[in-house]
Image 1 (cartoon, rainbow, N blue to C red):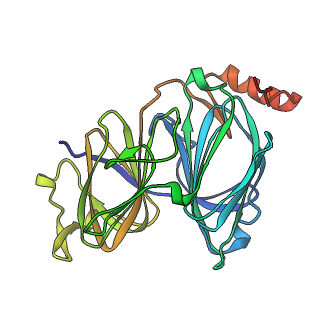
Image 2 (image 1 turned 135 degrees about the vertical axis):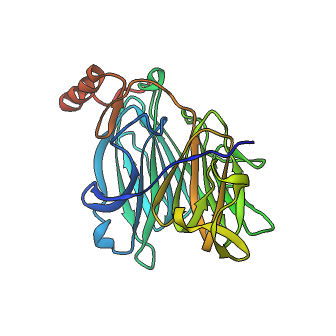
Length: 303
């Protein structure tokens, strides 16, 4: 077994999207090869409805898949194919935009005025860019959760982990998408397929991720609940951690415990032509998509 080295830790950047939704971007719109097959991930968490209630009015997508995971509040959605619904706390929606879709997503607060969740964009390979659009909505009760004796909890949203398989299936990037909680002071190791790109995103508490250069997986410098934590490299709220190659990720939770997403996927390794919500392989394909938007032929008839 080999620990994946930590290539980089960086804070998510505040930005606004849609009609003025305040969120934090973990990554995206820079180097599409960095976390191939993933293009972008946004973290929306706000307790002021004025900063998110305007939502994401009608907009197009082509050439990608999106995975929306809601933790609190809800997200109402509607699209050009006649689909509509609402994602509540713990629910997941996977959308294959494929050849093209128009949709809107409108966040709604919970009783405390909070809306919280994530949207991850996964690229489609060239042979699936123009596939027929489709949806999969998954309710929270359908998502398996593993609870270990030490208090570690893992929700398996996509992929197979510790003998459980997530209900979201058929995504071209074949990702593994886990929501993990590790109790205070506990050190845990999680397997990750060697041939996948992988990252973690910390959104509650803090933790140290062991690096391959640390001897015997030892984390240094501060006693926490009888164990050791490397406070120099702690990853706190809204931190992205990129990993190199290896087949396991080791994390030690800080004083408050830690909750993070651990996501990996098989690289597509194809050229990317990307502008806004449309991702193709060539500039010509991108220009054609926007031309079709202008002349009303963007949405393709069902076969």
